[in-house]
Image 1: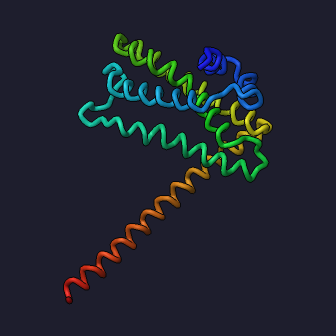
Image 2: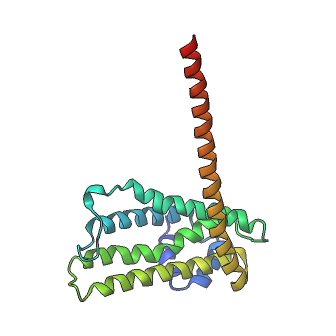
Image 3: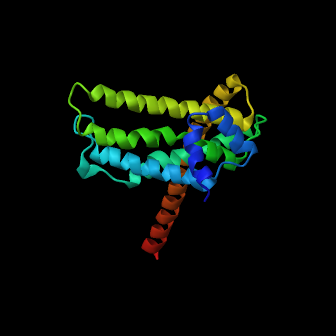
Length: 206
């Protein structure tokens, strides 16, 4: 893999408008790099929850489950991409599904860059310095949201106002998908229970 492609995410976080344009129109983005950034974010979050200093870590290590990070990071990532693609396909968005995935994956880069050193430094902080831990985490989250906004705007060729509207509607679509998913699984459970009941009745009377 070319060094330029590996350096591209680092350049993107400082020049998002130009780099998201290159990602869409000059084929500078790679899906496997976006997946790699997402994987490192999962690792960083696991390390943060398990090894952050006791002043900022309220998790009980006995009850931590690394699989949960897949639910809280990977699942929302794909849910966001599917919801955004489904919505923007109806709202004249020019972004392809793979471009949405790459833009979102590259946008989480600040979280990776801040979480890892912040977790290490938190073990040497005293009570008066804890505010810096939360401050840098807040900076990382704001940076991520800014990159996601610029990425969606560039990928879909929307105006800033339309980008904000579609991002808010994407959150609504995520809620609808989750609701329909829960409804579907609840219905499946009831159907299975119904047939189990019939089977037991047949066994009992035969």
